[in-house]
Image (cartoon, rainbow, N blue to C red):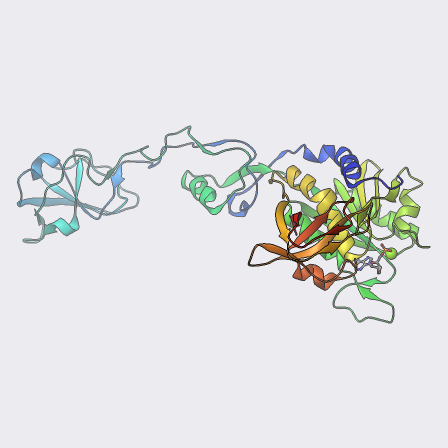
Length: 396
Ligand code: AMP
Ligand code: MG
């Protein structure tokens, strides 16, 4: 692979990862379904309301007995919300009833408590009558059994979870998440929180890629690190293939002496070379024991730019999430760019809607990446863009 365009490399990655898009159903507790994607249309197994019930605290009566008001009726029973024996209304009486309680046979309207007075214990005076059907919630008036409540492919939000619980689902079938492993490489890397010895740095790519993957709807099954020793790298890869459908590596793909990823995967049929973009030029891909491996360069900014340009939307699509697409923004300042390479500069959207640069193009500038909210996409042909030019920007 010698110096291909971003589009060519993206197309090759797309082919390598084609199988990731075929998902199965996974049955999970509804309580854990927030943010997951429904696997198929979910139909209601019941009517809602489940039974005819009162919309008000008041008195269930036959509307014909309250046509002339005021009228005083005997209170024959009290019906609370909750398990009840269904009893018919004693003709000519009123049943005291609470919101949500089942309405007795023979009653067709609810007189709200506000429209009544109590003349003596055991009776009620209806001051204002109600017509048939008022404050009555009929069974099935919200949804009928068999109605589709949530369509296939919906990202489940609290409102969807609410209706699924209301019709009694304790579990729901969701789209399985693509299972991804992250493998960082480099003899210099240690976990954040450890004590550094000279020459060591904290491994930030592992945790960063894992966060990006989770944000894209993936299940991160492994986050592991290898030294630059080929044997150790192979061990870590072997481990990752046990659970992952995709392995993303960082580091070890450039032109140095200890490029463990390239050294191990190149001879196994991997493609390693250069993509005409900056940052993120050195890229690799391979099938390792049948599992696709994408290899990104180790500079933290390069790793993130690689993920965004080559993997994010593929992972999102597999997860059932919509793609993150670029939008157009106007440059606040002029930009120079090396010819022949697509540049992805860190930018920040201003309140006036324009986009400004955050620090320089260096791929080691992690802090600038945190302060940026977009990548400014500068065409490979462009060498200089004046302030006021329109550019594409990718959300970070
Ligand atoms: P490499 O691609 O392995 O040549 O690494 C390029 C640069 O990125 C070097 O300065 C590495 O120390 C740094 N680097 C590589 N991997 C990581 C990582 N996981 N976290 C932070 N920096 C890294
Ligand atoms: Mg390295």
